[in-house]
Length: 356
Image 1 (tube, rainbow, N blue to C red):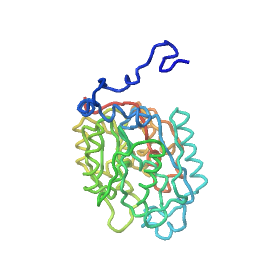
Image 2: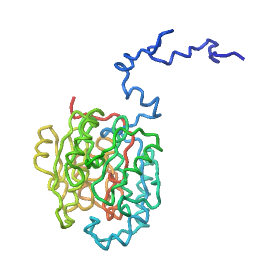
Image 3: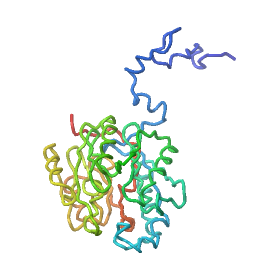
Image 4: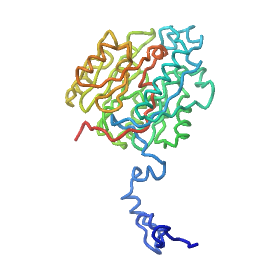
Protein backbone atom coordinates (compact mmCIF):
# COMPACT_ATOMS: atom_id res chain seq x y z
CA UNK A 1 0.00 0.00 0.00
CA UNK A 2 1.44 3.33 -0.99
CA UNK A 3 1.14 6.49 1.07
CA UNK A 4 0.46 9.99 -0.28
CA UNK A 5 -0.25 8.67 -3.75
CA UNK A 6 -2.96 9.21 -6.32
CA UNK A 7 -4.65 5.84 -6.97
CA UNK A 8 -5.44 6.78 -10.58
CA UNK A 9 -2.10 8.14 -11.69
CA UNK A 10 0.26 6.70 -9.10
CA UNK A 11 1.77 10.15 -8.73
CA UNK A 12 2.48 11.60 -5.30
CA UNK A 13 0.09 14.38 -4.31
CA UNK A 14 1.17 17.66 -2.85
CA UNK A 15 -0.69 18.25 0.42
CA UNK A 16 -0.11 21.98 0.04
CA UNK A 17 -1.50 22.44 -3.46
CA UNK A 18 -4.95 23.38 -2.12
CA UNK A 19 -3.52 26.33 -0.22
CA UNK A 20 -3.57 29.52 -2.25
CA UNK A 21 -0.31 31.48 -2.33
CA UNK A 22 1.63 28.70 -0.60
CA UNK A 23 5.41 29.25 -0.54
CA UNK A 24 7.55 26.54 0.98
CA UNK A 25 9.21 27.48 4.24
CA UNK A 26 7.35 30.79 4.55
CA UNK A 27 4.50 31.96 6.76
CA UNK A 28 1.10 32.37 5.05
CA UNK A 29 1.04 35.36 2.72
CA UNK A 30 -1.46 37.27 4.79
CA UNK A 31 -1.53 40.35 2.59
CA UNK A 32 -2.67 38.25 -0.36
CA UNK A 33 -5.40 36.53 1.65
CA UNK A 34 -6.55 39.97 2.75
CA UNK A 35 -6.51 41.62 -0.64
CA UNK A 36 -7.16 38.85 -3.16
CA UNK A 37 -9.60 36.39 -1.54
CA UNK A 38 -13.09 37.59 -0.68
CA UNK A 39 -15.65 36.07 1.67
CA UNK A 40 -17.72 35.04 -1.35
CA UNK A 41 -14.73 33.25 -2.88
CA UNK A 42 -14.68 30.89 0.10
CA UNK A 43 -18.40 30.71 0.84
CA UNK A 44 -19.09 27.30 -0.69
CA UNK A 45 -15.86 25.76 0.70
CA UNK A 46 -16.75 26.79 4.22
CA UNK A 47 -20.55 26.77 4.27
CA UNK A 48 -21.26 24.03 1.74
CA UNK A 49 -23.49 26.03 -0.60
CA UNK A 50 -23.60 29.35 -2.40
CA UNK A 51 -26.15 30.80 -0.03
CA UNK A 52 -28.04 33.73 -1.47
CA UNK A 53 -31.43 34.62 -2.93
CA UNK A 54 -30.41 38.02 -4.21
CA UNK A 55 -32.94 38.88 -6.88
CA UNK A 56 -35.37 37.10 -9.22
CA UNK A 57 -33.07 34.50 -10.78
CA UNK A 58 -34.39 30.94 -10.83
CA UNK A 59 -35.44 29.93 -7.31
CA UNK A 60 -33.63 26.75 -6.20
CA UNK A 61 -34.11 26.29 -2.47
CA UNK A 62 -36.51 27.54 0.21
CA UNK A 63 -37.55 26.82 3.80
CA UNK A 64 -41.11 26.72 5.12
CA UNK A 65 -42.97 26.27 8.42
CA UNK A 66 -46.31 24.45 8.57
CA UNK A 67 -49.28 26.14 10.30
CA UNK A 68 -50.04 24.94 13.83
CA UNK A 69 -52.61 25.68 16.53
CA UNK A 70 -50.62 28.82 17.31
CA UNK A 71 -52.31 30.52 14.33
CA UNK A 72 -55.89 29.92 15.53
CA UNK A 73 -55.91 30.66 19.27
CA UNK A 74 -59.16 32.03 20.71
CA UNK A 75 -57.08 34.74 22.35
CA UNK A 76 -56.75 36.56 19.02
CA UNK A 77 -60.53 37.00 18.72
CA UNK A 78 -60.66 38.73 22.11
CA UNK A 79 -58.95 41.78 20.59
CA UNK A 80 -58.63 41.40 16.84
CA UNK A 81 -57.37 44.98 16.39
CA UNK A 82 -54.40 44.33 18.66
CA UNK A 83 -53.65 41.13 16.76
CA UNK A 84 -54.04 43.00 13.44
CA UNK A 85 -56.62 40.86 11.69
CA UNK A 86 -60.31 41.04 10.83
CA UNK A 87 -61.45 38.65 13.51
CA UNK A 88 -62.17 35.76 11.13
CA UNK A 89 -60.20 32.78 12.43
CA UNK A 90 -59.01 30.46 9.65
CA UNK A 91 -59.76 26.76 9.48
CA UNK A 92 -56.50 25.16 10.60
CA UNK A 93 -56.94 21.90 8.69
CA UNK A 94 -57.63 23.79 5.45
CA UNK A 95 -54.69 26.11 6.12
CA UNK A 96 -52.42 23.10 6.52
CA UNK A 97 -53.79 21.48 3.35
CA UNK A 98 -53.25 24.61 1.25
CA UNK A 99 -49.82 25.20 2.73
CA UNK A 100 -48.73 21.62 2.07
CA UNK A 101 -50.03 22.02 -1.46
CA UNK A 102 -47.65 24.95 -1.91
CA UNK A 103 -44.78 22.81 -0.64
CA UNK A 104 -45.66 20.14 -3.18
CA UNK A 105 -45.95 22.72 -5.95
CA UNK A 106 -42.44 24.01 -5.20
CA UNK A 107 -41.09 20.47 -5.23
CA UNK A 108 -42.79 19.73 -8.55
CA UNK A 109 -40.89 22.70 -9.96
CA UNK A 110 -37.57 21.25 -8.72
CA UNK A 111 -37.33 23.78 -5.91
CA UNK A 112 -35.89 22.16 -2.80
CA UNK A 113 -38.09 22.71 0.27
CA UNK A 114 -36.64 22.46 3.78
CA UNK A 115 -39.61 21.91 6.07
CA UNK A 116 -38.48 23.35 9.38
CA UNK A 117 -39.95 23.36 12.87
CA UNK A 118 -39.31 26.10 15.36
CA UNK A 119 -37.25 25.13 18.39
CA UNK A 120 -40.23 25.43 20.78
CA UNK A 121 -43.71 23.99 20.38
CA UNK A 122 -45.61 26.22 20.59
CA UNK A 123 -43.26 29.08 19.66
CA UNK A 124 -43.43 32.00 22.06
CA UNK A 125 -42.76 35.69 21.59
CA UNK A 126 -41.25 37.93 24.23
CA UNK A 127 -44.77 38.59 25.54
CA UNK A 128 -46.87 35.51 24.83
CA UNK A 129 -48.03 33.35 21.91
CA UNK A 130 -46.31 34.02 18.59
CA UNK A 131 -49.03 34.82 16.05
CA UNK A 132 -47.97 34.50 12.40
CA UNK A 133 -45.20 32.12 13.30
CA UNK A 134 -45.43 30.57 9.82
CA UNK A 135 -44.12 33.73 8.14
CA UNK A 136 -40.83 32.12 7.17
CA UNK A 137 -39.77 35.10 5.04
CA UNK A 138 -38.53 36.60 8.31
CA UNK A 139 -35.37 34.71 7.42
CA UNK A 140 -33.84 36.93 4.75
CA UNK A 141 -30.91 35.53 2.78
CA UNK A 142 -28.78 37.63 0.43
CA UNK A 143 -25.48 36.79 -1.24
CA UNK A 144 -23.37 35.23 1.48
CA UNK A 145 -25.87 34.64 4.24
CA UNK A 146 -28.77 35.88 6.32
CA UNK A 147 -29.85 39.14 7.92
CA UNK A 148 -31.82 38.50 11.11
CA UNK A 149 -34.62 40.98 11.78
CA UNK A 150 -35.82 42.71 14.90
CA UNK A 151 -39.59 42.70 14.75
CA UNK A 152 -41.97 45.57 15.43
CA UNK A 153 -45.13 43.82 16.60
CA UNK A 154 -44.83 42.62 20.21
CA UNK A 155 -46.17 39.10 19.59
CA UNK A 156 -43.64 38.63 16.76
CA UNK A 157 -40.68 39.66 18.87
CA UNK A 158 -38.57 36.61 19.47
CA UNK A 159 -39.25 35.08 16.07
CA UNK A 160 -35.70 36.15 15.23
CA UNK A 161 -34.43 33.57 17.75
CA UNK A 162 -36.23 30.76 15.95
CA UNK A 163 -35.19 32.02 12.52
CA UNK A 164 -31.55 32.19 13.61
CA UNK A 165 -31.53 28.63 14.94
CA UNK A 166 -33.28 27.27 11.85
CA UNK A 167 -30.80 28.95 9.51
CA UNK A 168 -27.81 27.76 11.53
CA UNK A 169 -29.22 24.22 11.49
CA UNK A 170 -29.49 24.46 7.70
CA UNK A 171 -25.86 25.57 7.54
CA UNK A 172 -26.53 29.14 6.41
CA UNK A 173 -24.19 31.81 7.82
CA UNK A 174 -25.60 34.80 9.70
CA UNK A 175 -24.29 38.12 8.41
CA UNK A 176 -26.04 40.51 10.77
CA UNK A 177 -28.71 40.78 13.48
CA UNK A 178 -30.69 44.00 13.92
CA UNK A 179 -30.36 45.19 17.51
CA UNK A 180 -30.49 48.22 19.82
CA UNK A 181 -33.61 50.27 19.13
CA UNK A 182 -33.50 49.30 15.49
CA UNK A 183 -36.61 47.69 14.04
CA UNK A 184 -36.34 46.13 10.61
CA UNK A 185 -38.21 43.18 9.19
CA UNK A 186 -35.91 43.14 6.20
CA UNK A 187 -37.58 40.01 4.82
CA UNK A 188 -40.61 42.18 4.08
CA UNK A 189 -38.51 44.26 1.71
CA UNK A 190 -38.46 43.34 -1.97
CA UNK A 191 -35.66 41.93 -4.10
CA UNK A 192 -36.32 43.72 -7.36
CA UNK A 193 -33.21 42.35 -9.08
CA UNK A 194 -29.68 41.23 -8.26
CA UNK A 195 -28.62 44.83 -7.70
CA UNK A 196 -31.81 46.66 -6.67
CA UNK A 197 -33.71 46.36 -3.39
CA UNK A 198 -36.72 48.17 -1.93
CA UNK A 199 -36.81 48.70 1.84
CA UNK A 200 -39.84 50.37 3.40
CA UNK A 201 -39.93 52.73 6.37
CA UNK A 202 -43.17 51.71 8.04
CA UNK A 203 -44.59 50.23 11.22
CA UNK A 204 -42.15 47.36 10.72
CA UNK A 205 -38.96 49.25 9.89
CA UNK A 206 -37.73 52.40 11.60
CA UNK A 207 -34.87 54.58 10.48
CA UNK A 208 -32.34 53.09 12.92
CA UNK A 209 -33.17 49.60 11.70
CA UNK A 210 -32.81 50.67 8.08
CA UNK A 211 -29.46 52.32 8.79
CA UNK A 212 -28.21 49.08 10.35
CA UNK A 213 -29.07 46.86 7.38
CA UNK A 214 -28.20 49.27 4.54
CA UNK A 215 -24.43 48.60 4.61
CA UNK A 216 -25.06 44.84 4.77
CA UNK A 217 -27.32 45.04 1.73
CA UNK A 218 -24.79 47.18 -0.12
CA UNK A 219 -21.98 44.76 0.68
CA UNK A 220 -24.14 41.91 -0.64
CA UNK A 221 -24.18 43.60 -4.04
CA UNK A 222 -27.18 45.90 -4.17
CA UNK A 223 -26.17 49.05 -6.04
CA UNK A 224 -29.38 50.85 -5.13
CA UNK A 225 -31.60 50.49 -2.08
CA UNK A 226 -34.77 52.52 -2.47
CA UNK A 227 -36.23 53.66 0.85
CA UNK A 228 -39.97 53.86 0.33
CA UNK A 229 -42.57 54.99 2.85
CA UNK A 230 -46.01 53.70 3.74
CA UNK A 231 -48.99 54.93 5.73
CA UNK A 232 -49.61 53.40 9.12
CA UNK A 233 -52.22 53.11 11.87
CA UNK A 234 -52.58 55.23 14.97
CA UNK A 235 -55.20 53.52 17.09
CA UNK A 236 -57.77 51.89 14.85
CA UNK A 237 -57.27 48.76 12.76
CA UNK A 238 -57.89 49.45 9.06
CA UNK A 239 -58.64 46.21 7.24
CA UNK A 240 -58.49 47.93 3.86
CA UNK A 241 -54.82 48.86 4.16
CA UNK A 242 -52.79 45.87 5.41
CA UNK A 243 -50.07 46.98 3.01
CA UNK A 244 -48.86 49.51 5.57
CA UNK A 245 -46.70 46.77 7.02
CA UNK A 246 -44.62 45.29 4.23
CA UNK A 247 -43.44 46.24 0.75
CA UNK A 248 -44.06 42.69 -0.45
CA UNK A 249 -47.76 43.46 -0.19
CA UNK A 250 -47.70 46.24 -2.78
CA UNK A 251 -44.95 45.41 -5.28
CA UNK A 252 -44.01 42.24 -7.12
CA UNK A 253 -40.97 42.13 -9.46
CA UNK A 254 -41.63 40.30 -12.70
CA UNK A 255 -38.57 40.94 -14.85
CA UNK A 256 -35.80 43.44 -15.31
CA UNK A 257 -37.61 46.79 -15.02
CA UNK A 258 -41.10 45.25 -14.95
CA UNK A 259 -43.23 45.01 -11.81
CA UNK A 260 -46.81 44.84 -10.58
CA UNK A 261 -47.74 47.46 -8.01
CA UNK A 262 -50.68 48.52 -5.88
CA UNK A 263 -50.14 52.31 -5.63
CA UNK A 264 -52.40 53.23 -2.66
CA UNK A 265 -50.10 51.44 -0.22
CA UNK A 266 -46.92 53.38 -1.02
CA UNK A 267 -45.85 57.00 -1.27
CA UNK A 268 -45.94 58.61 -4.69
CA UNK A 269 -42.24 59.49 -4.63
CA UNK A 270 -41.47 55.77 -4.81
CA UNK A 271 -43.64 55.46 -7.92
CA UNK A 272 -41.81 58.42 -9.42
CA UNK A 273 -38.44 56.88 -8.55
CA UNK A 274 -39.39 53.58 -10.20
CA UNK A 275 -40.43 55.39 -13.37
CA UNK A 276 -37.14 57.31 -13.38
CA UNK A 277 -35.30 53.97 -13.16
CA UNK A 278 -37.14 52.88 -16.29
CA UNK A 279 -39.62 50.49 -14.71
CA UNK A 280 -42.87 49.59 -16.45
CA UNK A 281 -45.49 49.30 -13.71
CA UNK A 282 -48.61 47.15 -14.00
CA UNK A 283 -51.35 48.31 -11.63
CA UNK A 284 -52.91 45.52 -9.57
CA UNK A 285 -56.73 45.47 -9.62
CA UNK A 286 -58.20 47.16 -6.56
CA UNK A 287 -61.03 44.65 -6.23
CA UNK A 288 -58.59 41.75 -5.82
CA UNK A 289 -55.94 43.27 -3.60
CA UNK A 290 -57.39 41.43 -0.58
CA UNK A 291 -56.61 38.17 -2.42
CA UNK A 292 -52.87 38.83 -2.01
CA UNK A 293 -52.06 38.57 -5.70
CA UNK A 294 -49.17 40.99 -5.34
CA UNK A 295 -47.77 38.77 -2.57
CA UNK A 296 -47.22 35.93 -5.01
CA UNK A 297 -43.63 34.85 -5.65
CA UNK A 298 -41.49 35.25 -8.73
CA UNK A 299 -39.73 31.92 -9.24
CA UNK A 300 -37.82 33.16 -12.28
CA UNK A 301 -38.16 36.16 -14.60
CA UNK A 302 -41.67 36.29 -16.10
CA UNK A 303 -42.86 33.24 -14.13
CA UNK A 304 -44.77 33.52 -10.84
CA UNK A 305 -46.86 31.54 -8.37
CA UNK A 306 -50.04 33.37 -7.34
CA UNK A 307 -53.24 32.76 -5.41
CA UNK A 308 -55.66 31.13 -7.86
CA UNK A 309 -58.62 33.21 -6.63
CA UNK A 310 -57.09 36.40 -8.07
CA UNK A 311 -58.44 35.63 -11.54
CA UNK A 312 -58.47 39.19 -12.87
CA UNK A 313 -54.91 39.75 -11.67
CA UNK A 314 -53.77 36.51 -13.29
CA UNK A 315 -55.30 37.48 -16.64
CA UNK A 316 -53.70 40.92 -16.39
CA UNK A 317 -50.24 39.44 -15.93
CA UNK A 318 -50.76 36.88 -18.67
CA UNK A 319 -51.67 39.71 -21.04
CA UNK A 320 -48.15 41.08 -20.36
CA UNK A 321 -46.52 37.74 -21.18
CA UNK A 322 -46.08 36.55 -17.58
CA UNK A 323 -46.54 32.82 -16.94
CA UNK A 324 -48.72 32.43 -13.84
CA UNK A 325 -48.91 29.17 -11.88
CA UNK A 326 -52.10 29.39 -9.79
CA UNK A 327 -52.38 27.89 -6.32
CA UNK A 328 -55.30 28.20 -3.91
CA UNK A 329 -54.10 29.90 -0.72
CA UNK A 330 -57.24 31.74 0.45
CA UNK A 331 -57.55 30.11 3.86
CA UNK A 332 -53.92 30.76 4.72
CA UNK A 333 -54.41 34.45 3.91
CA UNK A 334 -56.88 34.78 6.78
CA UNK A 335 -54.03 34.59 9.29
CA UNK A 336 -52.49 37.70 7.70
CA UNK A 337 -49.83 36.50 5.24
CA UNK A 338 -49.45 35.13 1.74
CA UNK A 339 -47.28 32.96 -0.46
CA UNK A 340 -44.21 35.19 -0.37
CA UNK A 341 -44.62 35.88 3.35
CA UNK A 342 -44.45 32.17 4.08
CA UNK A 343 -41.46 31.35 1.89
CA UNK A 344 -37.91 31.75 3.18
CA UNK A 345 -35.88 32.12 -0.01
CA UNK A 346 -32.46 30.54 0.44
CA UNK A 347 -30.79 30.06 -2.94
CA UNK A 348 -31.40 31.53 -6.39
CA UNK A 349 -29.46 31.49 -9.61
CA UNK A 350 -27.82 34.70 -10.74
CA UNK A 351 -30.59 36.79 -12.24
CA UNK A 352 -31.13 40.04 -14.12
CA UNK A 353 -29.74 43.34 -12.89
CA UNK A 354 -31.47 46.69 -13.00
CA UNK A 355 -28.18 48.51 -13.55
CA UNK A 356 -25.69 47.38 -16.21
